[in-house]
Length: 465
Image (cartoon, rainbow, N blue to C red; front, side, top):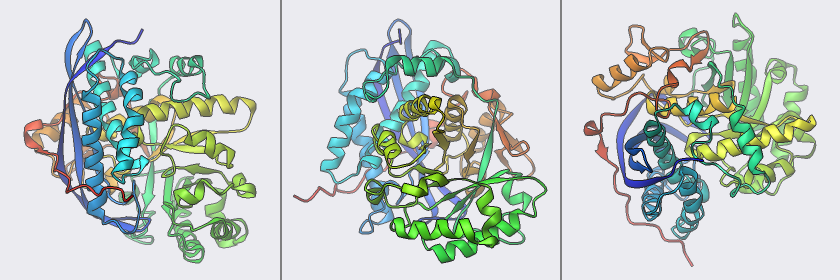
């Protein structure tokens, strides 16, 4: 039986993160944004108290892309979602399993946020970050690591939020996990990134020896095809084979525009290198259009849902539309990732392939990247987008003592090659061995005294009647 716990405290902090280069995806370019840190204290029945941590960037204009909102307003709504979740979680005063807490709060979280004009994807950010910190504390109290703890279902995950599954589907999936010892990085090529020459996609100093690439799309089939042809020509010069994915971040207006892009991929000889190595296409159309647009013949190309994934019901609904995959992102919820991985495994038994992918909203070096990497390694994601090593200079403005503590505790993940401590990439892979530490994939917590409290959101934008 999963241990039960009682929440004692939830505290939020943030730290500014300056990007080393602009990151343009969809309709926004990011040069800087705060990183959230969560600290929870729990009491575990019969085991005493423990402290847990989580971290994630507060990314603007991804959770909510409505054009009338400024980037700052969308970050404020993430802060607001965190505060709402904090109130809901702390209101549960009895002893519950970790998943009991999540399952009892997620519906009220989405409903309360909706009244404040915060969409479900942004609403889920609050519980997602609190859940990771709670799990870290629970694993520490139980003196076990993430991989062993989750294999034994320490969180008490059940099927109440996914009635299409049976309890045995989840427990069988969890107990059968054999975590990957290494996970390949998928190197992102943003819309403002250099393509040719020094600093370009084939520059080893830029791509860190990656064998997988993720190419951002603008939503213009003609411009995208021309840029993809340039990228393909550069990647063909690599001394290794490679595979790639495409990500439109909702920029393709409709199925007609998407058909035009796929037609070019299928028939343009200049795109043969791209087309022959393409694994899947991520979230091409706006989330609302996606839900009303069966892919039909396009489904053969392999598509995944990302921004449209705002509930436990999304993957079954997307499957009915012709999608074969869905992204795992810690910022959308680790329990949902596990449920969706269980679904993919169950659905694939009949022969048709369904899958979960590893995508990244620039998880930063330290707690964030380690917890997301561990989740992916646990559910079997062999390659994952890794933006933090690319768009941010190592640990950024993290205090030196904190950075050094992470490097000492996780020497297979970090190294100083003369430019400061940063992710250590081994032949295009990240190693997961040191993530088998007590807690949720980290031996080290942030220096809480060096963080500032989470900024208070501005006055709420109540939903109009």
